[in-house]
Length: 205
Image (cartoon, rainbow, N blue to C red; front, side, top):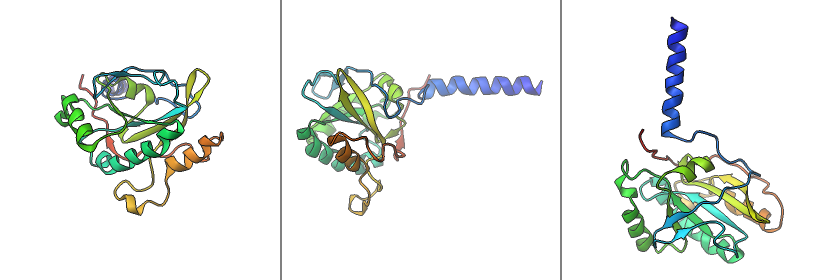
């Protein structure tokens, strides 16, 4: 009887986890990325394939409300300003459930993008399917993807740098180190780090 109860409890936990978060670990370095079409704050639908000039993208799952996301906001803008001219624009994606966090609604995304003058696309992952496919769990959670023929392949996953609180105290800039390698045609020497940030606010079942 105890074994049966334990089995039922474990099964229930797995069902609940599947409703509240990613069902799989998502992409790993070297995986091909499935394209997506998400609504930008200007109302346009944006996809990876839509920018033929892009050599790749810096895809960052972020939001309006997380303190970590706010702390990294200027650094994300700086990444776009540095790497978009080299063919790697930032694409920011907000995966949070707006019913749980009203401050992450589409209207609030539009307001923040306008207020902070975002130079990059800021997309709403309304169904949260893109975040689940990538395996994103935090805001911010960053992925560098590189064009290989018709495909985009993951080259780096994780944190932007080693200080989530103060940009002035950063010692190791993980994304910039990875981009230095990627832009010279090499695999990133450090291709994966631990993302630090708020947990994504998943839709309730």
